[in-house]
Image 1 (cartoon, rainbow, N blue to C red):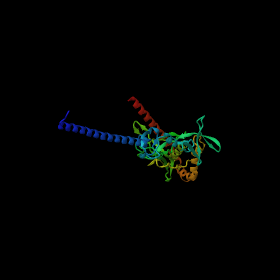
Image 2 (cartoon, rainbow, N blue to C red):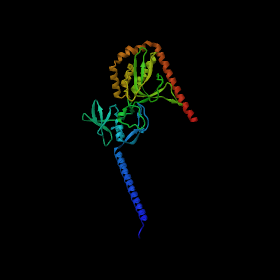
Image 3 (cartoon, rainbow, N blue to C red):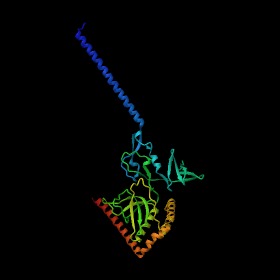
Image 4 (spheres, one colour):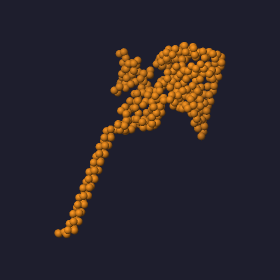
Length: 361
């Protein structure tokens, strides 16, 4: 059937429009396909570049102990994290190992080694008993592993990627003789807070100043929502407890002596001070014969005092201060000890009263 020119023109315009529409749709589909392919390729590339690492799930301060509950796994682009970031908690756990004598454990190529007397020994484990041992002088020597607290070297924020360079072994490893001790006779810094690390020092009237114990984390008792004004808790080893006892008694016997606390400014970065206070002869003998003190601690104490010439220091400075006080010193000792006991009883009563009050409410 013949068509007139107007119909033919309209039909051709329609077909041309359809063709252009199909062409435009094809171009759009092609562009979308290319974008989808690029996005998929980018996602695959990001996936290849992504790694799982442990990050902090909370803020931590310098010197604060790091525990596994502070960590969580996150997927992060490997180009945005240090090469030594880890997704294996055993790396961190092994980093915290020592034996009972305080010898460090290190990890090499997935194996554990111990450093004893500047010589490395590979640590093996018996299949039958699971006991750890080393071969030393062609003899099997069993060792007992001990986990040492890890602390933050610097202050870190939430989501910080954790590496072994950011943590350090605590100067206060958990040993069998570790106990929480309470003291209420120390002069405390005005801004002291729970979690601060401190040295305890003793200052004699002659100006002689000694470190009694070093780098101890402080906990301040809280009674009815109020921090104690004069009491602190510290975790001390047996030998440190004896050092503190000696220092307290001698501070009481020498009027004008100050037993006080000093804070570390950057606990995670600063090494522990070396104690310099030479204990008296009775305490020294007690330390030497005390079975609760690990041999390594005894060796360190003996080496420390021989280097500091403790006998001369005691005779020339400390003993002279105590002897000069005479009967007044002994009287002062009794008074101060009684005051300390009374303060402890009062604090205990306040604590129990606060518990009873909370139960009643």
